[in-house]
Image (tube, rainbow, N blue to C red):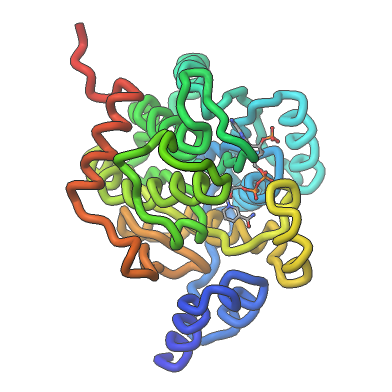
Length: 321
Ligand SMILES: NC(=O)c1ccc[n+]([C@@H]2O[C@H](COP(=O)([O-])OP(=O)(O)OC[C@H]3O[C@@H](n4cnc5c(N)ncnc54)[C@H](OP(=O)(O)O)[C@@H]3O)[C@@H](O)[C@H]2O)c1
């Protein structure tokens, strides 16, 4: 078992082997690989997945439907959402699937989505929607888009859904990225106003922010019985990767995981029993370090500074007038 753990950790720290399809191929054969959820593990539960029309979001929605969940596809394009629903229904007999519209980067649309949502119960909320715009882009509220889509929108959505995340085994899962290993938190410049914009840096900073906020969000929502987790998929072959990183996609093509394998830990996290401890980063069904490099390390004051910015932009904790 110790040897198996050593192989797993070595693949993780050297990044490339662990992130590719080799990672799960080897790990799933090692002794001690955590078992998959029982069939029907999500029966009677509702799982909402943002960005469910493509890549990992579709694979996550399919995985949750296969485990018996009522799946709510939270999408910005409802026609695409309807096609995705048909695809899931065709693949999973008896699947219960709904489509809800939400542009996660638009804080007003997040508020409207929550107000319109016709269910009083969500058990699993997967913050999967993601993007890497080629040029610096702003959300309708004027926020840099990756921070709006990966941090502000999901935080506000979770906060507003808190009264419906009431099953006492509720789980909120942020799909983050191993790209964050290369960036440190920048609470001094959350909107990427300083220096020349780089799509990969902006993306990785916003994913770093997700990971650094995990402990804060975990403690904030623990009292309501909500567990908060982050998963990173490694490198998976999805439309998003092909469009945003064409050279990377071309170079690594045969080594990339398929979407199902990239979504494996997210689906596992949605359903495994008992629910793992809140506030941790996961990849291939194991807790992973949040830093691999000394230069990215972050202190509590920097985390608190970013959190103050998030609360201010989302009006969370604003005293009622
Ligand atoms: N693939 C990888 O190797 C990899 C690695 C690390 C992390 N990730 C993360 O995994 C998640 C899924 O990525 P993917 O590779 O599956 O990408 P993808 O194929 O591009 O899918 C992204 C999904 O997010 C949706 N989306 C984008 N902007 C949105 C918005 N403003 N509001 C609502 N939905 C929005 C897209 O909707 P439309 O269909 O309407 O465009 C699409 O459904 C992302 O968070 C990404 O950062 C992926």
